[in-house]
Image (cartoon, rainbow, N blue to C red; front, side, top):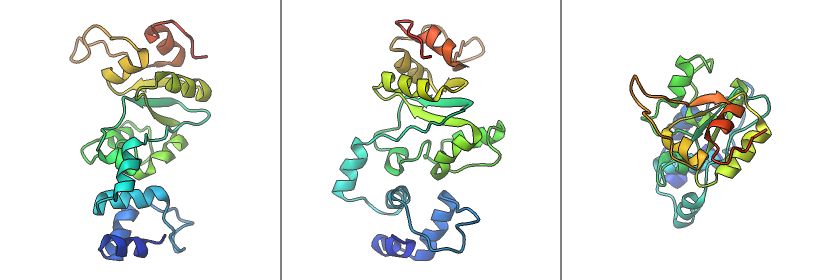
Length: 202
């Protein structure tokens, strides 16, 4: 499907849709000047932003999970608890897609990425040695994926995501100056400290 076809379905101008798509999903130099055929992710993202998805799409989005982003030779994998049930991330299939979420800005400010990426570019994070995953209710699945990709470190973006992965409560202060925040650690150390059964990942 081309942008103009989707724009007509959404009842908007092709120029406006293309402008938004270029902002969310920047095209590479080699792609510029060629015909633009939208991916399924791009279509769903535009429908979530500009139109009300149909009953079938809504049911599909509600039951889906955002695919984990892993790859060989990763420096770090950021692990969350899972997106909001009716949030923009789940609707668009892009990690940390809510406009108020500064995840990608923090990556750039920390110089983990060379430029500010947009949510629609989350799959490109592996180019910078970064992976993304969510625990949901499947901590063993996350553990298996981490074992396979074997990143140098794992960073849990909240206490709840760490507890979901560990399968047990993390006691002690979490926030503030006195807070002990074991959010990032070598993979083996994460397994040693927070696995209730002491099972090694690698």
